[in-house]
Image (cartoon, rainbow, N blue to C red):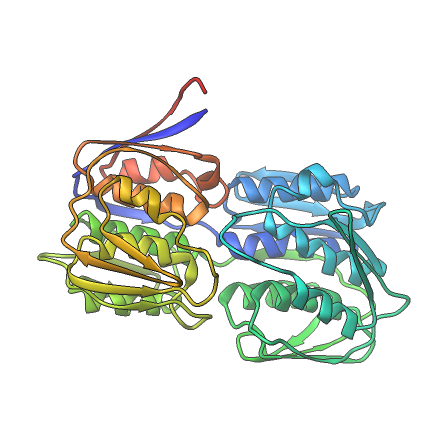
Length: 420
């Protein structure tokens, strides 16, 4: 059993280099299955989900080789099955992207129901309705999702909500559909755009990514090439909040500042200073934090993946703050663990209220999911005394070398092993 141990109350200062976007990587790696050749993907985050996806693709018959920790070469020409490996695929949510990639290329796919973070009901109905609109038959039985199609045909598809997963999965299949597909009310997140750009690099014909209408003209096959993944906005945001919660001064580099506009605006509302450059942001504060309200939404709104970290920061502000979660129905389950550290949060449905002025104190806690783990790290960095965080595997799924990066900023943080 691995744990993270933090001795808090240290003001973090320095510069931190941001890695590739986890949410883009876990879509682009499966998208390489749609290629008939060799793809090289650069700026991959060296995280558990990416390595698990590489194993899942190898189980399909592909050849995967990490040229270094952040570059992966995938030869998908030798894939010999449309059935994903059960034990590998159930460990991550993103395995469902194999459905769209395999269906598009081979006309059939069988993938276990996805795993990943558990923070409420996360159905894949929109994915399956999109596949059916393209002409596929979808069957869910015995924990598996099976999709088949004699032929995929372009269609107009309207999503009831702008689901990122459904948008990308439909896009993966529609690349090979005969005719034109139009996805209305599509997700606009940067990793949707990144996946579309990757597919276009291989020869797909996708336009409108980043808007609420995506158009795809079908092609018969995709080629190969080399692609670099965008920087991770959630990792970026976590370190920006780390500067604010510790009263530090951190510059995050190798980023796209525009992607951080929702968080930058909130930090400025709280009286944090944010300086912007071409590919960096500097965050620092000189006084007390002010309260503010946060409401999550789909891009370009405030990202749900930064909600736990932001709620943790608001606990330390002066005044009452309200956090409203609109994307997932059970994303506040981390709050009970945060309360062990002294958080003064009260939850009512999808709303959490904090009266502020919280002084975190060290305790033993456990991460309930990936982003809740980040929130507990932030609280531990600000807390008086020692904080021990369990279930570290959640953090390893999405944050690359986070202990080393925090240590480089002056944090007293280490990973240890304990008997169960």
